[in-house]
Image (cartoon, rainbow, N blue to C red; front, side, top):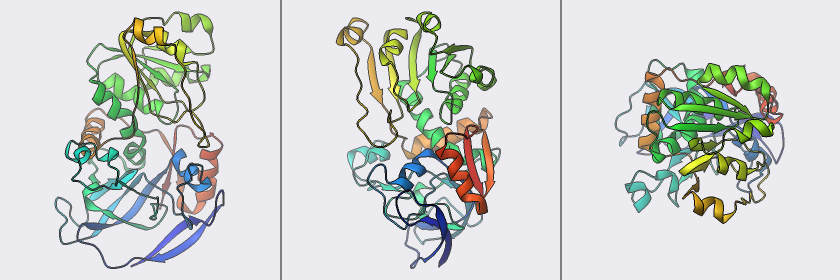
Length: 339
């Protein structure tokens, strides 16, 4: 099969047309005709080889929505013509303890959608059908595409921590991840506080479901949050004063990090005094996307509660303009390519 794609030829390079051939369809493979693909900041890291895992020519793209055009003979539950999505992960061993317990994202043999394989900045993509997910009819393709990575990234820790109605939740960073997290927390009937260094995000934060807005550069406003929150989701990538957020937690509260806290692969060290943790029995945890069951649940939850990723849509022909907008942190929440 002949694929028309856009690839970076080396670290930091612009994307140019790139054609490649696919061999015979494997038993669990499906071919997807791509209609939309999100441009995630992780794609920028891959293009630049910030994490030292990139291989060139590199076709990025891991927030893929499209139509199934071919299926291998062992594919079940998917049919030709069905609309499906693919996220950051495209495979795992499916037999280790993590896979068997629904944590395929922690499998040591996991396969990533555009690492050592070509991603969704293309007209077609081939993937393991067991890691492709039906997109609910009520979700628009352009706004659904970022849910496959960003949506899963913020929903999975909320699910794992077991948020309950009326829990007090803080979302730190109201950007591509945070604006989706606000919507999920609101839909879970939590009381939600948005934290941002940008006071211009206040109006949008309330529109996305926040009950309160805190300018995290305002010391008085931060002081007012002490011992008020049960759970904090940290989505921002810039270094932050974690001690202030730990003080905002109530006893037994948890702060979960879903970003690397840096931009170019350096160690994102975390410093919090032991008394802050021990005295209030508080905890810090990290979260890395989620397993297949959580992905299906997230998509269904988003559909039933009208949760979307607010996205700027670019034609695929303007792919470098779209990538540059994300690289410059100018995107108004998310950027999606449309073929």
